[in-house]
Image (cartoon, rainbow, N blue to C red; front, side, top):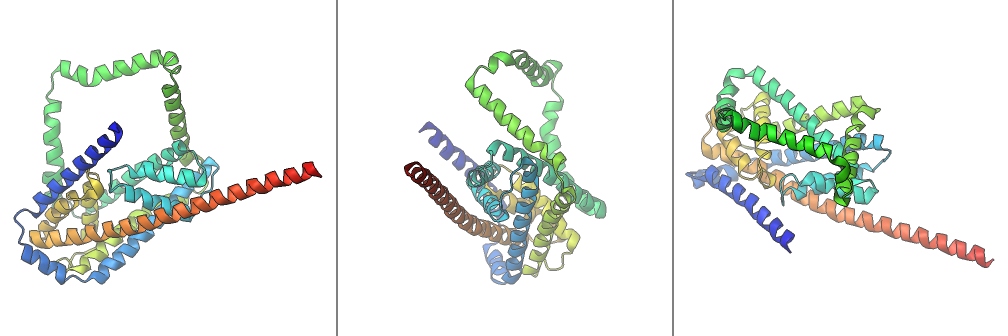
Length: 354
């Protein structure tokens, strides 16, 4: 009961943060002008962007199978895709829970240890971060002066402001923040044999072994080139998905490929925020970024709302369908297993009778 209450409170907290960010994004907006942008949008481009997004998710599912193969498991791509989409659907409940959810769903469907799948997902996230950084470097070097006008005051300066009190700490504070955790880790290492007597610690140790096993898959991978290709291809599709969306509104139709990359990068920062599906954070940061191009807040917010809304709706629909189909697949497999077991037992019975 307490866990359920905690989950509800956590959900409401994240949702409240998203609603608060939405409030700041829409505060002082001319709603009539915003509605005008919605009415005159060319939604065929949005449909096109959604198709590219789904292709990116299929590519992500295929890349995941490449990471799983060295673990001596071969999940079907379709079940892997379903699991990925269910994971994205779960993110609308709690931020970042999607990674755990898709591992649990695929593990149960394909009979793969979840702890090993968690290791492969960690590899995915690290690779995605590196790829995003590469795209960000391309962006900054292409139009350094223009984009630094947004990135420095809106991202780096606030981070530096938050770090300033930490950097000004006394020596004693530095010891409490850094030295004490190190001493705790050393102490736990010295008494590790006693800790392993606890069933909870043994279970945690098994989970960590599974995660490390998953992380090692990248070194055992036979098709490394495919993995690297799809890692860039996924983000290229995200880029194209964002770029084709600019043609939906007349106010953004003059933006070029690099401008689309700019929207993708700053949107990536928004989805890192601790809110369900980047709600509020995406609207705020993208509308703010588009003002650098001379767009009004209403025009920027209309673009951000259409993009976020269409992607969220597509994710909810495809994710829900995927969840239903996975349940069907799982029931079919359980039925086949039960049928085979019955045939085997019946065969043994007839043999003994004979």
